Image (cartoon, rainbow, N blue to C red; front, side, top):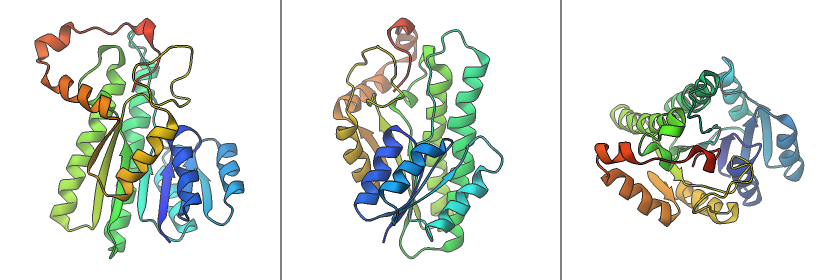
Length: 252
């Protein structure tokens, strides 16, 4: 039986993938700050699911993560879904610092622990570390500076660990999942977002990217085109492109 640990499973992408994997017969360890949604998933799949409350910004996050691995008797895949994203054109310090703490420091705590777990266990079957990043990591978005920078950090961190694993002969692969807008609680409010995918559309694509061992998966072909175009825009032109912060409250 395959085993996956999902960090950030209380809602949205993480919650949906947790239920899908449990339904498919995987052993699933789930974690988030809020306990009630985790208990609800456990009650749906009592034989397949174990859970733990984990705040990725807390000093004990890595230990609680490793304890959760023990609860499901091992781990083949880590999926890091925990993340925050806000439009913050006023550069409010609390918002930007929290974004970096969750998306960067929190990810590092969990991903480092997962890497060292795979290094220590020397699995015959290849382990996998998957992170939900974003197409926002392609360029610095002015009204979401900390968010887009944190997603760029995640991409670069996975690139670096992929190189390190090769050098150290650690049997682990990495999947960088780059969605655009997905209809989850992250996109709250009355704002209409362009090229939004439903969770029913996005979840199978994310699951396929993980199970097939994709290195990079840009979810939604429309955003793949946008991502390519963004990379082609020279810096002087990108500076002149503006997004109206009144049109949206969250980021892809």
